[in-house]
Figure 1 (cartoon, protein in one colour):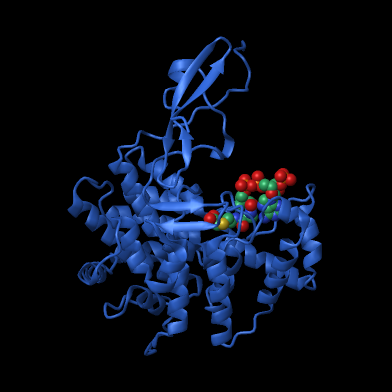
Figure 2 (tube, protein in one colour):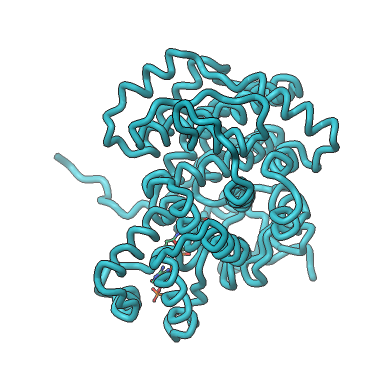
Length: 421
Ligand code: CMC
């Protein structure tokens, strides 16, 4: 293949270099397009636009491949913990025993939050949406931590990362307890990262909490599967906010807002609400498939389709198996799971979904696990956010280390020409 592409404009022609990734993805480098031709590209939703060079996550939507730093999501989900995956994403390699225990100790030592933040938590109305509370508390963390980090200083970057990794699960547990009208639980430094999260979320007062390995394993898998997904809406938000040199916590707080929407992380809440609705409506899955196909109807089959995966979402395969395991081992019989399975089978055999390559995504089954663990529906996207934190940190750091310019798209103006008052 040539390493240049020619664009012809009337009598003129211009050559632009091609940029090639390690997995042979090829992009046209149009950095000079406007200065040389006066033209810009038009690509709503950035469906054809590569916004950066990245070493973190590789995704092949056609083949259903997802890898973090070269390791397949299957290998990671089945063999290592969320904390090891977080280390891999942020620092580039899986940790050895000493590195893991160092990070783990540092996180445990930073696992407390200023009392003033608890006052902010208390001030939220009891019906506030958990994602709104999480987003505000993350922004509020800035008051107690550096708003801007010198990324070139390994020590400063390490500290900011440790602080966020340590404090974020505490915030998540606070939001969970608030939504359930329960007092908060303190962090327990003797427990692993995920056990501590479970303890802070689920321990009843006075209860000698015994962690259940089925729950810990399911939570750990969910966090790993959500840990990064290259340049999706929230991650691009984190990178673009950070490109203005805004701090890491401020950028991640913006990412949480982007994640909230039902077309992105909010889909897990939307899926369970949809399944509940179908159940209440007599379990008529066909009726809802027809609604999803009807262009006059705004209804979409939530948990189906993906901007990048045009084949099975590899995360969905792992999570479907985990959902089955959790329900069987915890002895839960959830009719919503049967509706989900029926809907999946019908959609996968329906020409509308086949032609458009619409498959179940990670959110189609993650919500069933969250529900089995007793997590309220509105908390589901908060759990997604917790998993995505290491990815956001890694992407923010990479963007800053690569000295990426401020993100600032252009537009094609379609409004009035100049007119008089
Ligand atoms: N139900 C019915 N039709 C759909 C669906 C769906 N869930 N998703 C896409 N389509 C149709 C869409 O109407 C369009 O049809 P046509 O070509 O006839 O106009 C075609 O498929 C292409 O859809 P699109 O909206 O152009 O595709 P996109 O890449 O812009 O959107 C998506 C991707 C994820 C926003 C979309 O599939 C969707 O809305 N899915 C439901 C929400 C959801 O589950 N989101 C979670 C994504 S996974 C978690 C994450 O990583 O964020």
